[in-house]
Length: 165
Length: 293
Image (cartoon, rainbow over all chains, first blue to last red; front, side, top):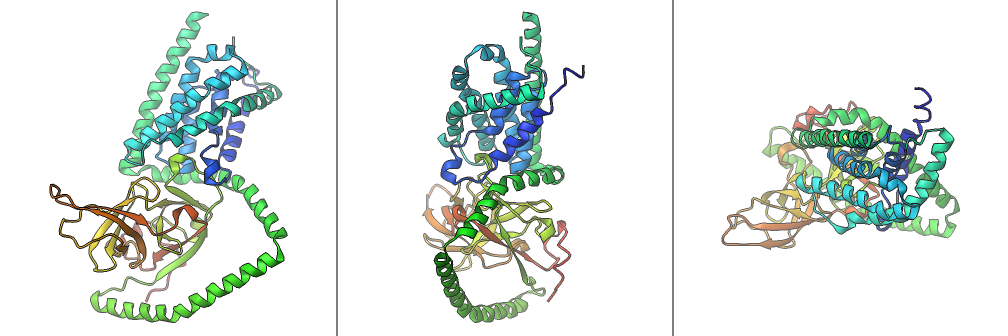
């Protein structure tokens, strides 16, 4: 059993790193284009380590984001767990694809997350939907292969088992 | 193999439903009751660590910039600051005179003086927030520096917002444009009382509940009225952008824009009343603010 859990620590570690990268100060014009690193890392683990990562991981990652940015508690939690579900649902198909094909599909869960988050915001009476919200989904395309290769190497290094079929 | 997949999918669906319900409950609890504020306080320490780490490269960059900054550039900037300083100092006696007169007059009007306003200086933490948190800013000062919820945040031009959460060394300011934010104001020209609400978008404010007969027009300056005893009075908040009158309505539709430069904030001044009689006293006032008039 312990061998199964070997290397799980890379999941929280990589997420913490993603949170820091996400919070790096950037000029506003660039900041709206930055890919949602936290979501992408979370989605990677949903694909690569479904035994440990899934809807629950999405929820708690989102909750951490809510606490960090002082947004409505539950707003990003709901958004991220929806995105995680989409990936968990299509995980087996997703894993079959080439990296570049995956990169073309990854905007879907990211866009879903942005939409849900914006909807909750709008429902709470704060702001409205804006196409700027979808920019991170666009930049997720080049970001995914990069992140995939990095996290894959990290996963091997940590010895976390790839529990796919 | 297929049934394992099916069952794990079913589990994922169940989990999605459970977590969705949980998230909805949290959002409601946070919005309606604000009970989550305490929970937030506990998690704030971890958040501070993340922001500190994210601020490191910027701090290094600034150090580098400072170390290699042109001597001439420094001298030029110094001269400019000195000029501004002289200008401000020239205006100071007048302000002091006005403040004294103001205090005397207010003492005539009210039994209790509002108490002197205490000012704190706080820099923005160099961090990036997602679009969801657009109407918030993070300050690199917290409870350890006497920052506490309820303080009014100002820039050189006017009101920025108010402190809504204070960690030990970081705090969150909700901008006055946040849809959950409102400030009691008066029209500087004639003293007409009103309340300014945030529009949820940067730069948008509204002033509802004014009757059709209210004397307010485009270009009017709105300043804090001090009503509700939460904020010190007389700080510029917004300028009226448009006043729409519709005979079918009982109230005016008034739009305003903040006078503070919310897009160019680097530091803010936090103001609060030293007097312990404000309703904001549900929050414990800082121990250092002990000078009563």
